[in-house]
Amino acid sequence: MDADLVYLKPNALIEPLFNQWYAWSYLLSPASSAMLVANAHVKLMQSFVASPQIHVSALQNPAMRGGPFLDIPAERAPEVKALLEKTLRSQAHVIELAEGIKALDKTLADEAKGFSLEALYRKVPEALKGYVELVYDLKDSASIRFFEGLLYRSRYHDTSSHSLCFSLMQPDTRQFVLSTPRLENPGDVMVQIPFDSPVLDDLYRLRYEAGSFEKIRAGLGVPAEKAELFRTFFTDAPPRARTPYTGDLPRVRYFGHACVLIEAPGVNMLFDPVVSYDFDGKHDRFTHADVPETIDYVFITHNHQDHILFEALLELRHRIKHVVVPRANGSTVMDPSLKLLFQALGFKSVIEIGEMDPIPVPGGHVMGLPFLGEHGDLDILSKRAYHVLLGKHSMLMMADSNNIEPRLYEHIHAHVGDVEIVFIGMECEGAPMSWLYGPLFTRPLVRKNDQSRRFDGSDCDKALKIIEVFKPGQVYVYAMGQEPWLRHVMNVVYSPEARAIVESNRFCDLVRARGATAERLFLQKEIQFQDLAVSSDHSRSR
Image (cartoon, rainbow, N blue to C red; front, side):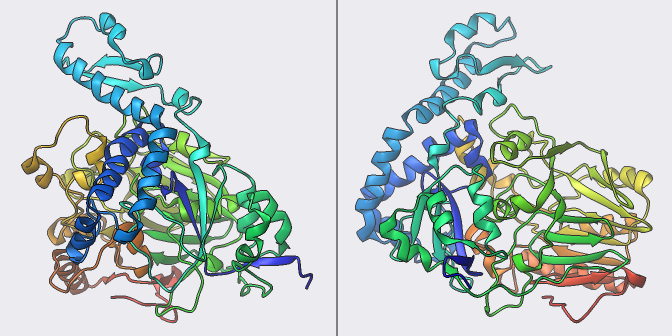
């Protein structure tokens, strides 16, 4: 093999970063990004620089991991201070935008009493002028509506903040990333490059197609003095061969968490891509090597970091024909447009799907369904369950739906009928609302309200009511965050006594007692639709 022709190593980890923080959806939408930078990142770094040992001591308690503490050794405080100072300089306009949002919200609360809002436009902070509309709802409660499409074309969407960090994946050992900036370690290579750059597609093709090392090094802007280190992320050895699925009936593969691949004649569909790297680890798994070369549709259920993982999505971008996203408000900090976000990140065809909207696919359709719960009662529209119909075969992908109003599913059943398979999440306790959305609020949260409004899915009794309506022959509990390669965005480690485990165990027992198949999925699973038989050769459950 030509010495310049290389493959990307199967365990080469490529983390997308924004200002050296792990890039996730709310950090990439302009208005919500400003709030996170100002209200989370800056404050966390200031706290660590002032008292690093407090953070180190707090994280000695496993229960505190995932909380507002930087997972960095105290001796690296000078590096955090340097990043803080850089952020305050380079992101001054972004912080000004966040302060403007907070100030304008207060102005509306104090002065918008049902009279015309026109006079208040003079009091809109400079950073927001021309980017917002002031509006009332039908109860004369005033709020800010962002012209989000304009914000993506403004200085507040700054791709110079984008970078990639290359390292080598050690089997399933990654720290929680959302509360800690990424500092460069020995053996790492960081490169600054916009996420929408086509060079990223050239890079990720090297997972399975040999290419020029020098071309990709130059395209990414890796300096010559780092070439030798950068070469350690590549190999001359070709990857394991991909075996295309050629069966006549749909095949369903569970890749972990809420990631499900459906391969059928004429169409490949991937739901909530969270795909593991390919290496000989402790646990069996499907990986990037098991994803087909062409993905006709990627379907996103909702805008949470464990369902929209850009680390995986950017790698798959060049293989994806269409991304289907829930239609959002698209004008609020809490519910930014996923369509605009994916387009800004270089995805060519992004389709918004509404409630009860069908998307035709060969042999059937995929219909977006209403999705209750898991969002702390916030006015967030960007959440969809999906009904998949392929020939005579049907299934529901319900993600973290919480059956808080059973009549909803009766109404849906009247349109879609019984189904053969149901996938449903049962994280029935969940984190409080502030864990994800806290930095987006303009006013302090009342603790008792925050604790009562959680990211919870259905418990056993609620999930059973769904099963009673749709009468599936197979039921799979998924989206539980148990896979070890998800710890960096989930930080979930259940004990056998955890409510989610107890409730899902009871649920599976009761479903099986009714004569249906039921499992809580873990690691990987393969389902063949033929006679609804489940292949046991590739099955793992827990």
